[in-house]
Image (cartoon, rainbow, N blue to C red; front, side, top):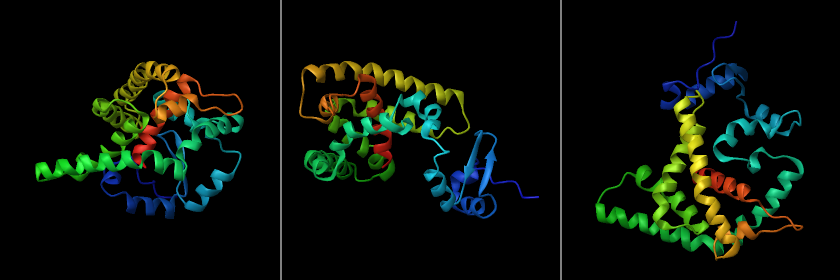
Length: 234
């Protein structure tokens, strides 16, 4: 009888996941995690094979991501996926991205570094790595710099929600509230950009058009939510 699989929700995993991951790959290449109500595949080749097998689907993302983000590219397939990707992808390709946003990246990095000089000390994670991507994304979108802290709070809450594999109801509720709050914030801004375009990423998303089709307001809001978290983690 196989030994019980190590628990990836345990404090020991958070402290040092690598020995546990090695044990899972060795002894539990496929197992059912009851608390997550999911099967876990732990070996690279098996994961790669699963991604290429049409019996598996991205629709699983609907229950994972839509409560906090809304409908996103990750939960779409077929024509909807192609349409969405074709509308947003041009703004995230090499030269376009570099020419448009490198100054934003450099400015925000310099501002954070200047704060270290003033303080004389730094907690790199708390004072740089969690703030830098959020500030850059907010500025790329053309949103007010005064809202950096608000978006940082939303970013943190969404990430805690996505890591809530144990299903803590308070964490779930907080994440779902962010979806409502971000929607209330973004929809008027999206409407404004539709009538008063600016030189920013949000305007480009609002006015992007392929074969006569454009993104809807909720699709744009959901993309902003996904960009905030996925871009921040990247």
